[in-house]
Amino acid sequence: MPRLALYPLVALFSAVWSSAFVAGKIGTAALDPYTLLAWRFGLTALALFPLALARGRAAHAGDIRAGLLLGLLYNALYLGLTFTALVSVSATLVILIVSCAPFATALFAAAAGQERLDAGRLLGVAAGFGGVAAIALGQPMTMATALGVGCAVLGMLAFSLGTVVYRGRAGDAVGVNFWQSVAGCAAMIPLSLVFGRPGAAATPELVAAVAYLALVVGVGGMGLWFFLIRVSGAATAAAYHLLNPVFGLLFSHLLLGAAITARDAAGVGLICLGLAVVIRRRASKPGAA
Image (cartoon, rainbow, N blue to C red; front, side, top):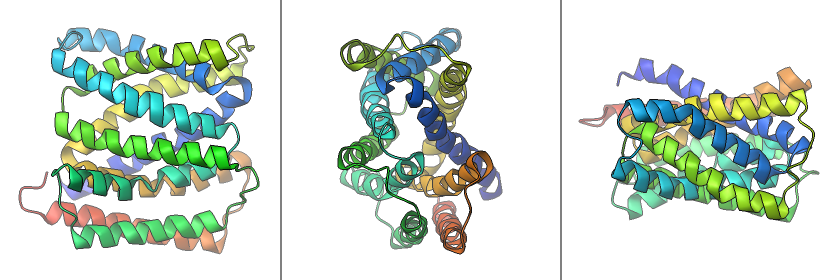
């Protein structure tokens, strides 16, 4: 895929993915994370079912196997743990932790024999991570708890493993997303019944947050993510998450009036530089998509 065509898709993906944590923070203020995610996954599955049926993938054995496994890694573990973290940790800090996924994904992909640890790519990821660290050092951490941070880190590792799993198994994006949403909903329902508060009032903010998470993020964002894994590879696609703090800061500034400091600007510059190196290294490889 041409590099210039890839840049806007990466930016769109990062904006949608980062906004999920802002919507999740709004949702968990009114509802427990397990019930919130059960509704999200259930609505995503309902939206995807007609598409999966029309494509002949609703009962495809390969999509079912891949979807159920990714439902455990992406939905139950990654989103379950990170949304649990949002109860006690700021959305900005969760975004920063998830942005460290390129390191774990590169290691998992190398261990699986999918990709080599290219020195130039690792240098680009390191530059991007330096930008993430620069932004993180300027963020107030008073909302963080050890349990919340631990949940976010474990969720990031589950996400990285899921990325490598999808790269190895492939499958139809719609079919896999449908079945992983079904699996995620099934995993969250018992947790909601035991630990949740399913009787919370359905405020307009909560309804908007659930609808946004289910349709914009669950259908659109996840579909775009699967596409980027296919055209870029697991490690390179994971590096796109280095751009998430940029949009995290932008949303905080536009929605919450948070100031953007010189440290933040320097971090954004490093992130963009690192991301450009990663994409260029991928595109320059013979046979790269």
